[in-house]
Amino acid sequence: MGFVKYNSKEERDAARKVAYGKKMEFLRTPEGKLWKRNEQLKHLYGITLDDFNSLSASQGHCCKVCTRPASLNRHGSLYVDHCHSTGRIRGLLCTNCNTAIGLLRDCPERLNAAINYLKED
Image (cartoon, rainbow, N blue to C red; front, side, top):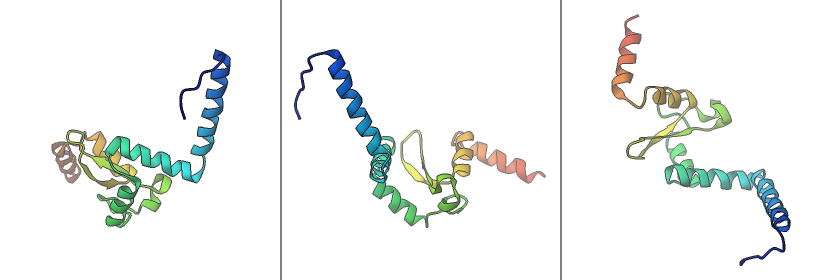
């Protein structure tokens, strides 16, 4: 499709509104949701939805840290954990483990300090 010349700003805006509506309608379909998830994974982590599903299967569809099944997680899915310095994907985690690692700023020393703190009791 090539360049389209509109007779007025109103005509152009109306066409944009129709196109936006069609896009939103598509994104509400199962196919649209899969397409959007695939695009998000490619943009954020450089992997496809097929890559994500393969990684999930290789982990038994469980969190790599606590081994909690993805089905028990919020939205029934796991989250991509990656190194913020290198971008390397470490694995898929449940909400709790992903949040905990994030709150500890991906720092092994902080995690060890937390472990030692818990052992004091």
